Image (cartoon, rainbow, N blue to C red; front, side, top):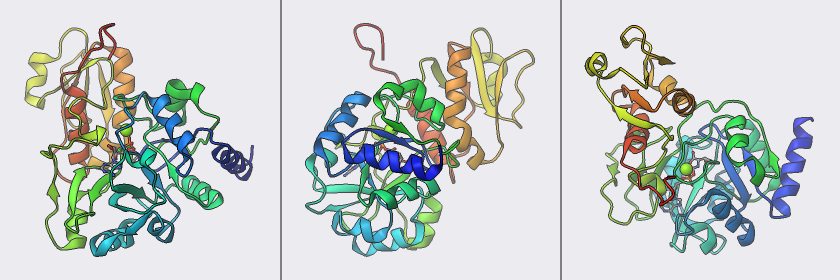
Amino acid sequence: MSQTHEIEQAVAALRRGALIALPTETVYGLGADASNELAVRRIFAAKGRPSSHPLIVHVADLAAARTWSTGLGPVGERLAAAFWPGPLTLIVRRSARASDAVTGGQDTVGLRVPSHPLALALLRAFDGGIAAPSANRFGRVSPTTAQHVRDELGDEIDVLLDGGPCSVGVESTIVDVSSGVPRLLRPGGLALEQLESTLGQAVVHAEQATDVRAPGMLESHYAPRAGVRLVSAAELPALATGDVVVLARDSVAVPAGVRRLGVPDDDAGFARVLYARLREADLLAGQILVVPPEESGLGRAVTDRLRRAAAPRARKPDGAF
Ligand code: TXA
Ligand code: MG
């Protein structure tokens, strides 16, 4: 099928209120027409996600973004101009266009212009907003290939656009600019250092915020089935025994005979392979030992996701997560 035809099919699916999967440079999204409340509710049902957790509206450009907001404000405008299209989500004051179904009833909305060419082509052809969380079941690892989406949510989706493996590999950086003072809600594919140098000011990390509306801010999230434990390279010889697999950069020495999955030495490379490796590791062993990167650049997002994957999990009565 030609790409134009695929996009036409995806647009038709969006217009009839169905769910689609779309590639973005960060992770694959589970998309619906953001203006169709019924379609938006289908997203929550498919993911098993609580309806109070708001969705990001994806748009084709800054002009489209402005129609979903009463105003991005000077900080929002500056960040949008610098980093869109790209792995940045701005939380801004919503306009009447953003329904409660999308925002979870909050007076703000999350907006993003993704840079993946297929996502942009789709957004231009659709000429509307696409509400899209990551295309995984609630609490699980985000998908970075079309096959991950097929495995996990294949039955829920009318059209799956395959844009190849995601180039960034972790979700967008979320910055709340709705109060005029930028607050980092989620470290992600755009490095904090880049945000700060563009703004010429420090961006406060809102991790300790008490109002936890963002699932990415829940303690246990991004979790494979296997246990995840963060360790230092020095601890590996003592801990890497039994039913374990090691995830560490290729330059880290791993004891002989212990299974390991390769990870590039640079932060961007770690981010790009992170979720695929967690899925692979999950099939290999009951416990995943991970040597996390330094917490700078994209290493901050990688370590954030690993901590959440390692956090104690609330088990349902049937033993499932
Ligand atoms: O890279 C990404 O951001 C991917 C791709 C598909 O764009 N999407 C993604 O969506 O990660 P999701 O739903 O898995 O995570 C979006 C986060 C959630 O934690 C959500 O609660 C938060 O954004 N969010 C959305 N709107 C918000 C708002 N108005 N205020 C605070 N947080 C918001
Ligand atoms: Mg998600």
